Image (cartoon, rainbow, N blue to C red; front, side, top):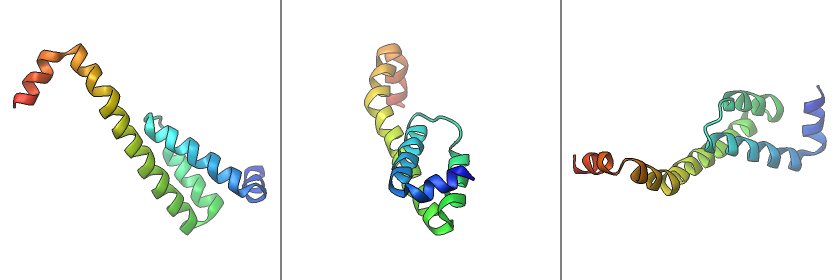
Length: 90
């Protein structure tokens, strides 16, 4: 279809856009990355698709972890300091 033609004609732009969207979705835990994974295989072939999915899924999950560590922990400590101290003591 049209998306396959666009991916072929504007390969670098499409890959950068695909990676950006996938990493954003993984970082903020937005459902739908399974469809992005399937799309990668359909558009780029199995080897390139798997490589893209592994890279973007790892980058997105790492971003999610670091974002929650940097922002989530202070918010949890601010909202429930006594519960956090209890769990830290355990």
